[in-house]
Amino acid sequence: MTYIPDFSFEAAAARRGYIRVAGVDEVGRGPLAGPVVAAAVWLDLDNIPEGMNDSKKLTAKRREALYDQILAVADVSIASCSVEEIDEINILQASLLAMERAVAGLKMKADYVLVDGNKIPAAFGLDAEAIVKGDARSLSISAASIVAKTWRDRLMVDLAQQYPGYGWEKNAGYGTKLHMEGLAKFGVTPHHRRSFKPIHNML
Image (cartoon, rainbow, N blue to C red; front, side, top):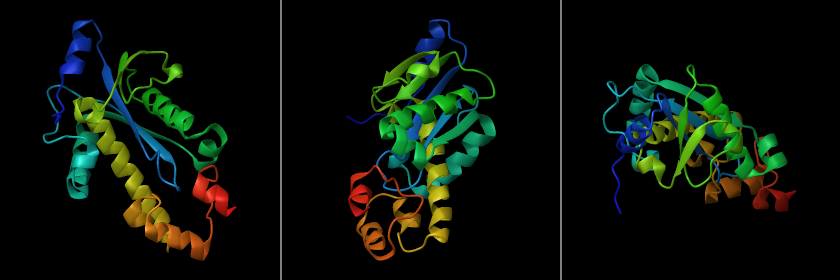
């Protein structure tokens, strides 16, 4: 089924009396290196950038352009969980914690949160709704997915300059052939997730 993100979930929450409905999404659950990053976005209904969609369906160039547009017109908060935290509490808990931090960081507190996926972080302390494939269905979650992915990709490009040879500027820390070759050649960096099996096995 092909979805086009719209404002129907946000509108439904507004009809139930919620005033500030934010979307939240995380990116970077699967990579072997780098943090997990979440973004929370509250969109102004009168000022929504055109052409938003699930970040995975957009080109990097389009994501970059939308990232700047979203930051210019929306209330946006970006948060992450470090590699150390991922190794300590596991990737699922770290993903939920990053989302909690992102929502807590909004300039104006949300009173309802649309969450991509099927789990709602327990510590939100806010009314929330989990939406499977939310980044393709809700404009607020779509905006959050674009912001989180663009921010994390930029971070991995920066880290790739400090640790060349793993291809992070291309693979964003996922376990591609080039990344695995880099691990075999140069070993494990401080940015690798030691609890993830390929890294754990090398150590």
